[in-house]
Length: 55
Image (cartoon, rainbow, N blue to C red; front, side, top):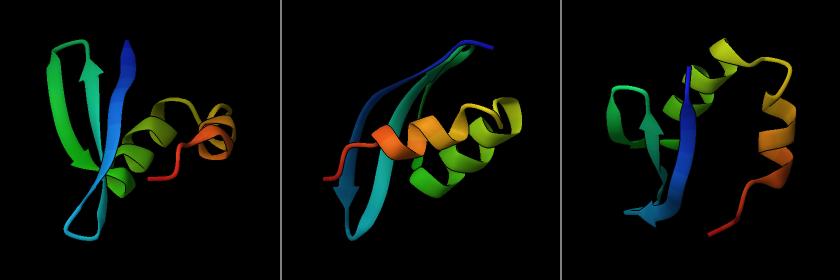
């Protein structure tokens, strides 16, 4: 599965991400993205969490 975080931002106190997946672009909360990404790449989730930009 192809996935790429295009941008992250804060909206009304929620950390949001814009993600490009194989079938389109989605805007979702960081927690939703964490759940989706973690299911596909549990071994890489720790690296993403450590390298996350703070808004």
